[in-house]
Length: 277
Image (cartoon, rainbow, N blue to C red; front, top):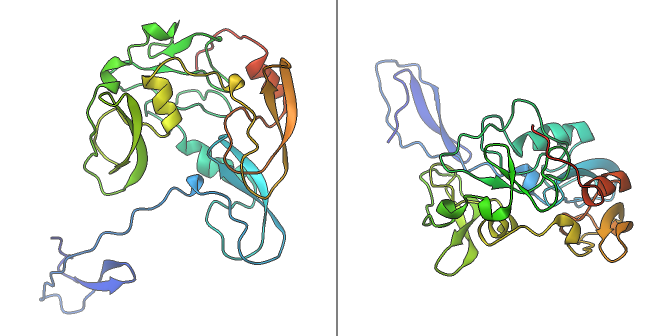
């Protein structure tokens, strides 16, 4: 039960209660204030061209390939994953991949940023290679202390043995945890606060961390994705031993999906030594 200050009156406002000026200061009004609905992450929403038939060039954040891609907006409807410029998209969505002072567990698409993603984790973690920027050479994985080690040296066990913990917040987010009894990663709804470290953003991340060495993104099969667009992209063809272009449909697919041949070559054809962020 929450109360408004003495000079304010609780009144309903759309989906929530708010405190409004109340002119008779001698009266204290007590209302139960409703919580606002949890705010969805607009960067995880699929692109939506809307209901109308105009053709405005826009950008949306594709959470599968971790990149801002262009699409054509019809002019009405749709969702908030809709930006006028690529810069607007980057500013809104890239900063949420790994905010400052949070545990680094996802790759920064444009490389490692200085003074970001410091490790505050009580348990050591190993990280798969990033698509650009800092990573360990193929076959090695980034240890929490910054060194590159073989997968069997990754101290991942304690995290994957932790029991399911929903946390104690009120923002319900789709996440994944490793169920050691069933030996598989399962979906659950995290409350957004508290909980433990057996909590992953995607099933792929959970599987890679808890079930064995990650499959290199360069070995993933070609996937066109789904959607109504034809975006020129590149993937690494393991049989041909080179990067080949394909037409990406705009949504879904996998991470063997690069914006340029140079980027694809850099990740899949060249073994680079590890670089610290």
